[in-house]
Amino acid sequence: MTEVFAHRGSSGTHPENSLPAMKEAINSGADGIELDIHVLKTGELIVMHDEKVDRTTNGSGYLKDFTLSDVKKLAIGRRLFRKMRVPTLEEVFTLIGNSGVILNIELKTDIFEYQGIEQKVVDLAKKYPHAKVMYSSFNSDTLVRLRELDSTSRLALITHENLDAVLDLHKKIQLDAVHPPIKAKNTPVLKEIPARYWTVNKEEDMAYFCAIKVKGMMTDFPEKAVAIRKTINNQ
Image (cartoon, rainbow, N blue to C red; front, side, top):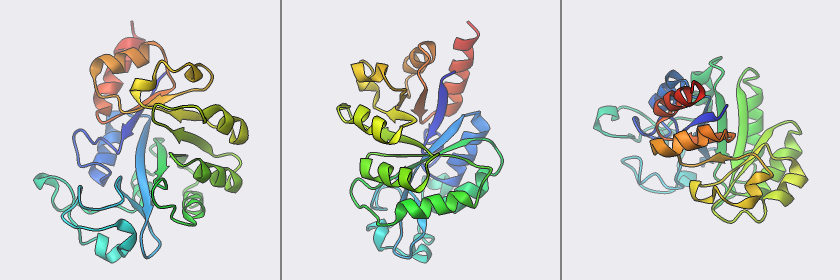
C-alpha cells in the first residue's frame, strides 16, 4: 500500500512545519510526516524549511544566527495562527508520542552543513525509542554520516530530475528509498529502487501513484490523499 506522508505536516491547511500542521497530519490518517531541520546558533534542532526565517515568520535573517530564545519570539503562519511559534524537533517528538506516525526528518544540509547535525538528530531520536524515524537529505554526505552513526536507520536520498548518483549511493549505504519529484516518475532507475514522490497535490496524481503502488508520496493534503488511497484500494 502506498504510504502517505504529510509534507511539512498538513501544510495545505495549516502553516507549514508548525505543530498544528503536524497534529492535523496525525488526525488525517497519514502514515508519516515529513519535516525539515536546521541547527540554531545555540545548538538546538529547529523545524523550518528555509535557511532564512523571512518567508514563514515575521522575522528576518538566517536560522543559524538565531538563539532558541530569539526564534521563539517569532510568529508564524497566517493571521488565524499568529500565536503559533516555530517548533523544535524535540517538541515534534513530544507531540507525536505513540501515534505510530513515521517521522521523516529531512536534514537541510545542502546549503549549510551544520557540523554535527547528524549526531544531534540521532541522539535526540534515541530519547524517543517508540518513535518511528527515518532520515532524508539532498546531501549524500549527510546520509553517509548517518549510516556510520546508525547501521539500522532508514535513509532516503532526495533528488531533482537527475538520478544518476542514486544506485551507487544505494550500494554504498543501503537506502530505504529515493525521494524524487513527480516529473521524474518515468526515469528508468526508479524501476530498481523504491520511490516516494514529491509533492503530490493533484487528485489525479494521487490516484495514479496509489494505483501503481509506488512506495509513497509526499503531499500538502494528506486527508485527501488518504481518502483517495482508500477508494483505489477498494476498487
